[in-house]
Image (tube, rainbow, N blue to C red; front, top):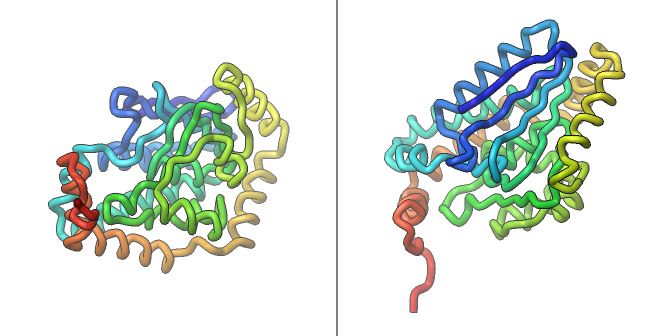
Length: 259
């Protein structure tokens, strides 16, 4: 489900290894990611962290079986569930050492959130992205502070509202990823970037990360509470339940016009 290791240089690699499920995550994987991030955060040998995935997809977002359970949750259960996802995004965003997302394939929903939480994102030109929540009667609430920080409110107005799929070139222009390369060169570019970062002062890198987050100041506990409350309310609402049910049953949602 999740593989992790640290090498002699202090480079931590976290690998989502659910290729058969397009590296979608559920509550168990979220908990494992949180635990692992905190483990390496406390490891004095950690210099930087690389997030990658196996298979064709980077991450399809929420796992189908997890969504089936969520569809039956109460508001309180949805709030608790959303808090766990918020904790994951916060742990990744606030990880003290530099973080790199290596995006080899599709990133949807929460997968876009993971990319946005990393300091640097490089992507294959074969990668694609989508914030599809509104098609399900939901919103990308928990990941929104990180995605908006990455692409800006103006671009979020389009891609949050349309739920359209966009390619790696568009993601580059939006600022979601900072570098594009061919699939064959992705690992070479990642290795080069790692080498570059390792030449810099570990203390200064951590201070730079904190400086940027302090100056920006947009992501704070009240915002986190607002976003988790919002998604819990929508998941528990009739329209939210209808959207999830329609998706799981592979039928049009009730709000669509039918001839």
